[in-house]
Amino acid sequence: MKILLISTNWETSPYPVYPIGMGMVATALKEKDHQVELFDFLQSGCSFDAVLEEIKRVQPELVGLSLRNIDNVNAVNEHRYIDSVQKIVACVRDGCSAPIVLGGSAFSIMPEEMLEKIDADYGIVGEGEVLICELVKEIESGTRPKQQIFRAPQQLKDCAIPSAFYDPKMVEYYMNHGKTISIQTKRGCNKHCIYCSYPFLEGSALRMRNPITVVDDIERLVAKCSDSYIFFVDSVFNDSEGNYRKIIHEMHRRNISVPWTAFFTPGGDLDDEIVSLMKKTGLDAAEVGADASTDITLKGIGKDFTWDDVVACNELFLRHEVTTAHYYMFGGPGETPETVMQGIENIHNLRQTANFMFMGIRILPGTALMTQAKKEGIVTEKTDIIDPIYYIAKGLDRDWLEKTLTEGFADQFNCVFPPDALDDKLHMLHKLGYGGTAYDMLIGRSKQKRVRS
Image (cartoon, rainbow, N blue to C red; front, side, top):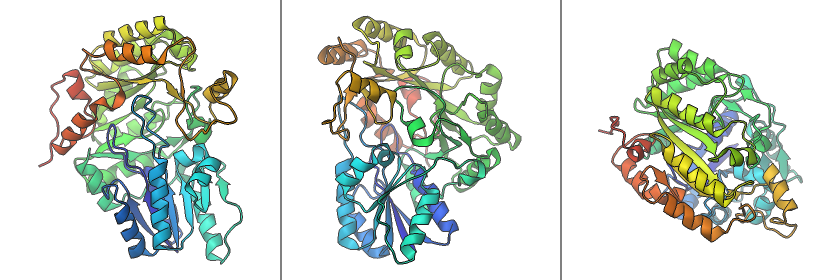
């Protein structure tokens, strides 16, 4: 079957991210001998005309749309993405009669609501590599299933999780716009953060990819793009079972040193020995998921570490000259005017790091925060959950919180509020050839950057 997969994402903050989920689905379809082509809406300049032209050129028998995010989770400056997806669907309808299948994390979070709004034919919840092939097989037989939504059992692991297909033209685009290419090392998350949809989407048990295969992917990417910058897209790279160490040791065994970054959680078994080895393999920046800035608010959102752990984690990476970036959400359960002020002071006292602040916490289905929001009457049966809804603790005035955060970080160049305030500078740096993260610029580090020739 001739299949066209479309990445609908147009967000570039803080940097463009290669649509790895779509790449994995493409691999699964190619292994079944289907003719698969990829189209990236962002790469096209977010042109609906380009979508229609591609549909007419390919004349696909099935079209799959990958939906990465519902919105930008920024309460101060909201971007909603469903309108553009609806227009992409309209372009597909204009150009061909092929059935349209929705997938990706945004769709999986609220499938019934998204399918109704977007008016596609089918949708796949969760990992789509197996189900998309089964759906294609049924359609090829000459019948269209009456069932519209298919739910994956979250069971793929090890070598059953495929390597992504990296389309050469798309890779070239992402190399020219941030130089960051995605690789996944695991699925699932065994943390208990009350706002996070990862356990809902991928399951609460860790399902590791084979470390050999992961490092094979890295070698192939480096061979194609010598100046690539790897972004491990796992919810948490340093998993509690220590599987991440196998990847680092395999990279070191093969003498691989390529700039990379990942999301890290404070605490656990991170130590000088493993961070030193990470540095040798190319670790350039660590994105630390603190997410709150006091012990009270960390506990309120379900974290299993303290603020002292956050400070120790930051110092650990600094000792090895690894740039750090931290993300915080103000206004969660347990937040008070006092914790806001204490949190601002705590962030100010962190050494040599970039800090990004969010106001409120986006409430998503399937999370403990959604359950709490319903109990508090923030979400009711009449609430349209596709529209962004943010949790802000009772007793906190929204206007006061925005004003306090704005003033609290106004004179701190390494602190960004709202989180998209740095977008223009990031885009400028990428155009000038800066690769990977731009956190060094924020914290005044003098590390030499790699610039395109």
